[in-house]
Each structure stands twice: as structure tokens, then as C-alpha cells.
Length: 148
Picture (tube, rainbow, N blue to C red):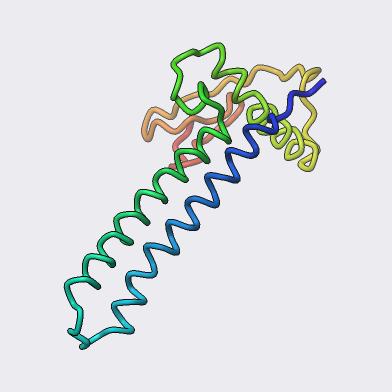
């Protein structure tokens, strides 16, 4: 049975996404406030403190959200929070399986079959003049035309 990402990790990922979006909106509100109050110097000190707090808080929320998203997507060990290679392999297994499935899909689309192919050995000969590799039955170099 294929391993899936746990519900707890999915929730952590989406909570992290919400935190990052709230942080981006909070950070962006600083610029909106600055534009809307351009040239208005009344209550400048209080507005400046508010904008600085929103800017700093927004950045903190964005960073925290990205960390929580990373842990949710890759698991504690897969994201490097816990240094355990065996657990990291388990945490990242759904993604490595997915990547293998994508490679298989691409090979199927290109009509490439793997496994039971027995290719013949190809011997290449290097040109003495330009050092280009040519097939063994070539009479002339494919690059410079020099006789082989």
C-alpha cells in the first residue's frame, strides 16, 4: 500500500500557508498606509510605530508560516528539524515515489521500455586530428572529415 501524507502534516502545511498569507497582507499594509498618508504628518510618531510593528510582525509571520509549511510538507526529519536519516527517508517517501511515477509517465509517453533491453556495445574511435568520437565503422571523421 502506498504511503500517504498524514492529516496532521497536511493541516500543518495549510496552517503555515495561512500564516504566510496573513504575514504578507500585514507587511503589505505598511505600504498602503504610507501611500494613503503621504504628506500627512499629524500623529506621525504613533503611525510610524504602528507601521514598523506591522512590518516587523508581517515578516515574522511570513518566516514562521514558511517554516511550518516546510515541516508540514516534508515532516520533521525530512525538513531537517530532526536529524534522523531513516525517519527523513520515511517522511520524504511520498515525494520520491511521486518523482519516480513522473519519470515512468515520461518514459511511457516517449514509448521507452526499461528492463529487458540488451543493447549492443558501441565502440567509438577518437579522431587523431580533432579528437571527436566517431563510430568504429566510420571511414572519415564526422567533425573534420579527416580519414580515420
